Length: 539
Image (cartoon, rainbow, N blue to C red; front, side, top):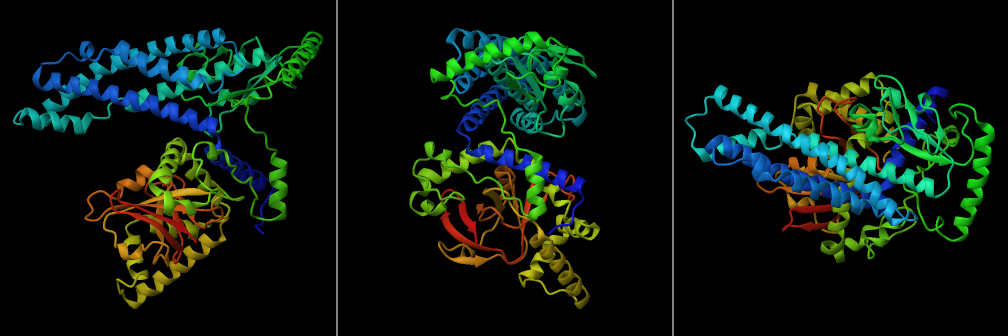
């Protein structure tokens, strides 16, 4: 039992709730489609931007290209925004007349095409100026055209990619919030309530306690640094200051909210009654019962979380459901988690598809997932723990793990130190609650001894093992190796470990690490020499 103050219990519960909400989304088919649509759009945008960057570099090196005319920005932007927003609208537009959907999506699409097109046009002269300054300051006149081209591509190959991706993500958020509001109008709801984005980076003036609820057809009053009147989160009438990277959302009600703006109780009560009858009628027709509103978020009370913490330190969370069956029908499921026994027989057909879908989803959230685990872990950490983890995050870990594997014999003084650190780190890892949901972890190794990975055999890691929530991070550690492999680790609920994000804990950022204990057992499921992949599950 962990001795926590009431305030600590509340903070703990909120963090666990947020982490669970993020992780269980991977089992929601609607949200899988959403992130596939976003990833498709951002991939298309990256490819389009690559062509523009190549044209700018070609113009700088040989003067034979016109970046603006050759890139055909108008058509490129239309293909990226319009088709993907229309495709994404299909998952949330059930029950809305087709004309209303087309009008709503077209309006959002046209405005974001204008925004994205302007951003791309503005970035072309910016890039031209940077390349010109770079060539002049670095004295690159002695390089051949091919060498100069390669050097410039290395230096500026990702120019403005992040800004363009953010605009695309904003367009999906605006489109989703707009359609959810249109759907609420057609469903007969009377009121709308502003809810915070589920991240601590929410704008202060976007916090729900500062924004009064309003009737369904009225605008919200946004105060604070950038005052505006907005129909829904992401409404472009609020300006970039209120729209960019916004994650807020709406919920809807027929009962007057306690923070309803103004009075008008008689009018709203009458309207609510009428809307209720309308809702009943629509439910009888089977329209609403068949529609899953993906904009309404699951409501979980903090009280229930706190009560469970009072009873025991480990919080029992909702188990993952079987919605992935519709995408991967041959994957077997049991009551508590995904069963990976199918991989040995159908590895190429199903497992790679599952990993790709999971990686696409978690790519949106792995930073936040890691950070939330870190913030939950603060209840276990004392200054000594933090020092040991900082040591692990430094170059110290290399010799330390070599000692644990028997590959390095230090002095007696160092042995005592290593043993003390090993015991502190092991006890800390064992004291945590572990993973809250079944998770895939990724570890890249440059030179793999395949005798450590024999299919269906159970072995133990020698030393503490770092892994990442991000597949891309795992792949980076394969670079430059003689026998590189990506190790995909299937970790179930409760697998012990320490999250290290480099921001709140540890010294190296951008690794989003889950540190496994010394002696952690694993079973090798598959070694694919052609794809350079090893799949293991922790025992």
